[in-house]
Length: 191
Image (cartoon, rainbow, N blue to C red; front, side, top):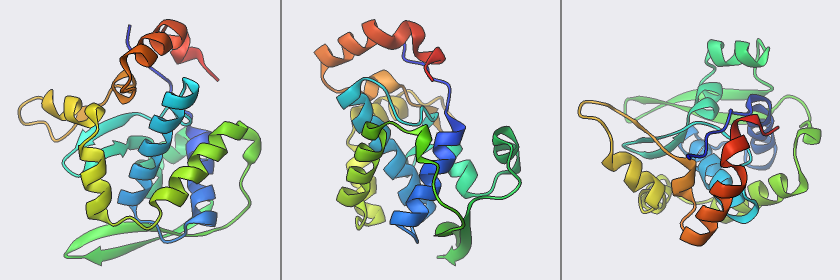
């Protein structure tokens, strides 16, 4: 049975805001890699991801789809959360002819009540460890992960992305089996 989670949009939004506080000027590529690395790490340590975002393998690596949509100001995703405006400033900068969105500064405090202590501990540790990594370093790192390789390997011809599976983010086979047995039947209902 696969690990299927319902994305926690409020947590995704608040982690983006937290990122604006602790690592302003992160670009959208860094943001989606930070989220992936944090969810992957928390899943391996504690048996559940932080955000439960939907991940896809794209040419530049794993993408946290809802986090990306929010950073880019996607109105549909914002409506699903019930907001008209983001709680942080963004800026679109043209780099090599392509628009890149950056998180700039927070506009309010973070609602930490949504998170466990382990959520914030792991997220902060990931930011500390990878905050200054270049695009190429994050690209190389995440392209080596089994979950990315497997998803990209199963990409349908002509598709530009392929869904990633949470169970593939757990590289230790015994740990994977234990987590799947423990939470797979109820993963969609976790709060």
